[in-house]
Image 1 (spheres, rainbow, N blue to C red):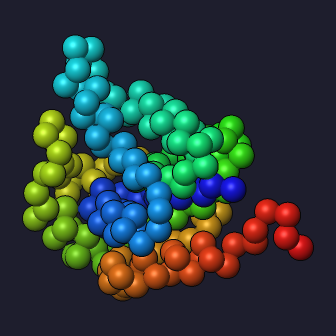
Image 2: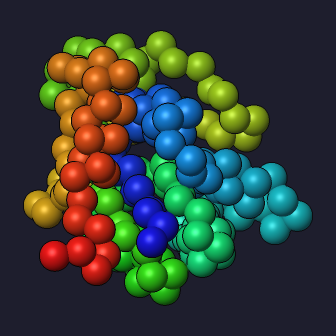
Length: 175
């Protein structure tokens, strides 16, 4: 059964860095919603607020690949229950195992420094300011599978914890 690993967390907490590092350790297709949203903004459609369309598009791509038996790592903010529900539906549609991972950064000074000093790595993808990150609607998870604090753990430690969690998951059909 393929695995869908869905990353969540505010901008600047380290999701992309950790998700990319995880992709180097396990066979999986890496999908980043920022890439899709940037493409939608730059397309002939010029969708300024591309969040809903971006999430729906990336979920569709995930389902297609999960149905082929490929693991998928989804790198998104996943700020609200509606966006999180899309991943549950995607996993069900593809008969895949879903693992929800929330990345947090409890050290506010570290989080702020990351947001204020990072460089854009996608053309057409504006990075939020610290004020925008603080003002962003984000509902913390109450039932996340794995929560990792990137201010306390190195990237390598986060990847190792995720890999251990994946390895300990019960296999379908096993009792």
